[in-house]
Length: 256
Ligand code: PGA
Image (cartoon, rainbow, N blue to C red; front, top):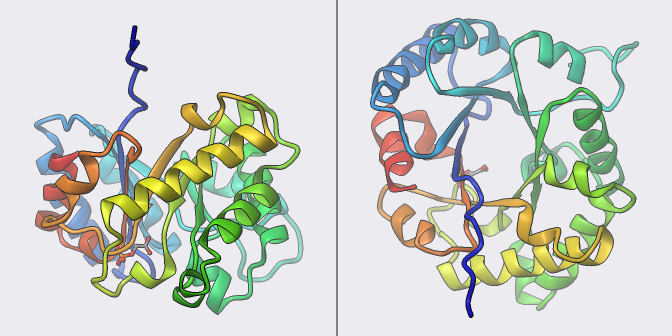
């Protein structure tokens, strides 16, 4: 008999990146809080820039919308000018943090070892990490997608226990799809998600992969969200560009 697994919770996260001044962030948060009054079926997370966390936190107080940051430093405190730590984010009202986004890997030199330290720092601070993985276009063309995903997931999660893995979320974000308007096909995303789950089974323990929430990210928009979310493998989305407009972000939330 085919026993259906309980579905993993649906999550739609908006990564605002380096966009929105404080007043702009407040306006977007207000517009989303208004829409959230109808209680969306999916969990919804907003990740504004650090400077807007305080203002957005105040606006989200009575709503189901959750607050997260886009990055953290691996240490809890110290002489790291310009950096922000996990304990700081928790006391700023965040429950989530994005770790190892490809823009940080590519533009700011974050390697797999640093991403692994940040993942542990997030878990220590009791933040839910969203660990981003994904291949570049050159890697896909060289047929290295599987190798890249296994390496990124393997190094990030090696040595963690089941509880830590299940307290984490992974976002599969093919670098060639981010901000390009070129979304991965549902089949490409499903195959990557399966590989990520298999890697978790190998490095942490059998069955773990199926319990971890895996988001797809890269040019998710109101026009392609429903097709992606129709796949059981795809537990939600990490949305960049389309999260900057309340209407388009909310259409994605409603599709989830
Ligand atoms: P995009 O960005 O939706 O603008 O492609 C996604 C991301 O970088 O998380």
